[in-house]
Amino acid sequence: MEEKSYVNKNIYDLSYTMRKSRARRIRNVTLTVLLFFVVMNAILIFCAIPIRQTSSSMEPNIKRNSFLLSTPLAFYSESKIRRGEIVLVERAEEAPLSTVQKILDTACRAFTLQKIHPFTKETPFLSRIAAVPGDTIYMKDFVLYVAPKDENFSYTEFELNQIPYSIDIRVPPVGWNTQIGVRGNFEKTTLKADEYFVLADDRLSSMDSRIFGAVKQDRIKRKIILSYFPLNALRIFRSKSKK
Image (tube, rainbow, N blue to C red):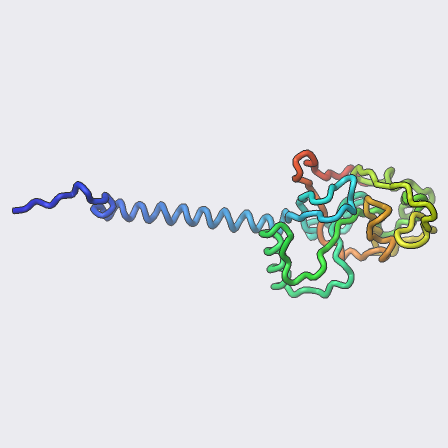
């Protein structure tokens, strides 16, 4: 009787137990990779959202083409919006999106480093919280002066800010009218309830509340918590104790 040869046989062709064990390992590895992918992207989409700064409006503190992490403002109470914090502000003309559109738009942003956003025509922009509801403010030579609610004395924005920063104030061209465009001077005004005054760090050539006025809290969706690229600009935006 001719004997069967198993020399060239694959061991998995001979053993049902080993085939079953291999299938279980493949399934477990696949499920682990999928779970890791889902969890990491859920964090990136809903907790720590990556964004790219494409303008120079926040220089010198955030360079153009820097990559940042932001967190939804929904994680914080209104009182946690602090002077000096960098936030993402929605443009006023932007039509509201449905819940499904928001989820899809956010997912596309997370996976494409903010390059693709099918439902949003105008992207939110970065700006800094310079004054909060109840503050009385005025500007002189591009520096904001702030009198907190129920106080009569005005401080410079740098004395009240809760995240240290500097601003870019280049010498304006000869004949520059500081009362038009991005004004360098304006008279005292008091912010109403739920109004925030936002300013760019590049004070001479950026859009901010000097152009479109104070913004409501519902237009402030996220705050910046970390700059992670380029590596030489790695920085955590940590708040000081509130004044």
